Length: 282
Ligand code: AMP
Ligand code: ZN
Ligand code: FE
Ligand code: FE
Image 1: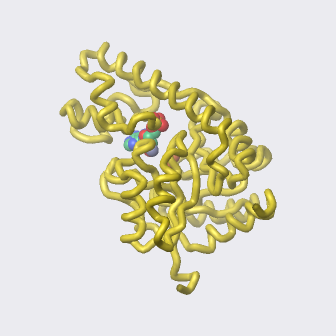
Image 2: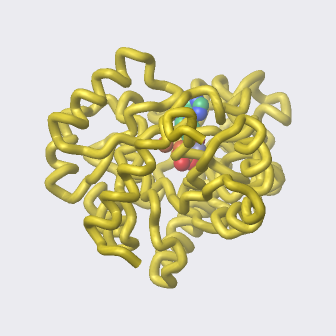
């Protein structure tokens, strides 16, 4: 197939974090929408990668190993994607485990806050929406609140209770952007600033570049054309690689998003070339 007709999705969640598709379902969906490659980028977990690779084994669909790490800078979130990572490193598994345990404890604190407001919800209600040992997050809690009829939509759960600065919000374990970038570097991956249009703090990009940031997510479901163009300009200015993905959460946020935004294969090709240049061939 002509390279120009090939498309990829470099930002997808599975049931190992807060997506509703299993890795196998991601693979099936990606094939249905005729993607050439899909990156599995769960929050704080790499456990979906191997099952996705197994499910795609007898097809031409490429599985790109990835992860999405949530860092904090001052008081806002900085999401760092690690793409093409050597995901199978024991030290990284230990670190992710530590982060996921902190997520579990945080979930208990958010539930306590909800209970203190007289809202009847228990940890088990939330765990019904998450995989065992997955990265537990606010989307699971929002879905549980919705299922129990406490809110009428996911959006309402965030707006009333668990959005940033709302009464039942609790912080995650804090890691700095530099720590996240260093980890991706040690995993011989390409670090990418996820959805900068949602972060809305372009002013920190030069500092992230100094700390080792290699790429920026130019194409994203929540970037309108104007944003995509803006971040393409910034990519050129700071000599960052361009990436793109749907941030599909299966049906977790409504419609599955895979296949809607068209990310050309050449972007993945450039990430691979950069990886080889930075870290040498395998
Ligand atoms: P956590 O990592 O547990 O803080 O949860 C992050 C998840 O919640 C990600 O999937 C976000 O996209 C989602 N999220 C954060 N804020 C909102 C919001 N206002 N509405 C819907 N989803 C949100
Ligand atoms: Zn998510
Ligand atoms: Fe994100
Ligand atoms: Fe994401």
